[in-house]
Image (cartoon, rainbow, N blue to C red; front, top):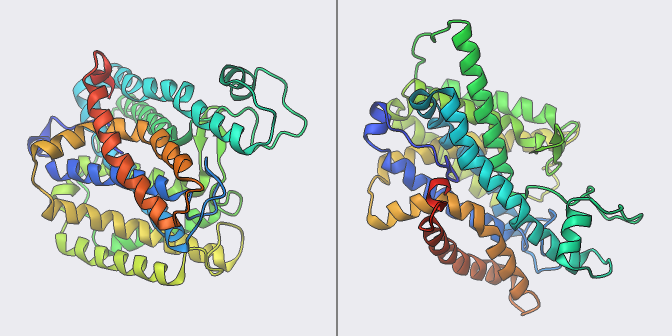
Length: 398
């Protein structure tokens, strides 16, 4: 994507010379996890989803909670690692032009094709209004050019949104902010300070505490799964903004100060072990336990903010260490999968939702339906991505 895997890749410094094969492999794994996560949404958590009234199980709800605790933060980190090198090579104008092409174009195209198709299916199946054609839905309801029904079921009017493409939208916004910061630094003639030391246990504990505190404070007003439009355009979930902003910043610093190469593996193994222990404990307790709360001024909200923040830091640090130390081989297949991971992120959701609709009312248990959606979507998405990337013009974007 620069991560789930986005398109920014290093070409300078020792970071670039190794091509960071392990980081490409991590991008593949995270992209697969996105598909697995969305496949579970219909069968686990109580969140809104495009397909309703399906069998559910607490295990998939917990899996969704574990994924949500860290994987998008790690996506932001991996994407941010490649941002400074891209800016250094291209300069501000070419960097922003490239970001608009690789991020902005798929964002707009997806918001006008993929997302309205998904929302139309939900409108027809679950909203309870008289059936209408897709063109009329697109203009009147999705774009909001028609009158808002008096009994509109929401959550907002019109239906226009970016769906799973919110990550690309937010990454574009962070890239623009980075370019602005670089320009301000240039005007102030600031050339950077000394090289920062590699984070150790103490620094990671401080980071965890800071993210937890910021998360708890934000969730006093914006609980989990509350989305707000920023400037009537940017789709943001404030409840996880402290994580995302922190890890994007850390990705930039990791590139500038050589943390990826210099980080002590022993520290990473400790945090990975702690993170996996927290995951195991969460599956025992259940993410929907009363002791965890999505927001508000109470102990359950404070506990979940702390637990989720610890999971986030531990799993991000641990997985970076695991892949750097052990998953370092590139094969022809892994190279193809890495190259297609960005396209998979964009196109996988309609495949997931289509299969969830197809499997509805077929008597499958929740885990069985989830496993079937995963098994069918993953190869289809990667094969489709490979085909799309070979179409004229698509390769420059995907």
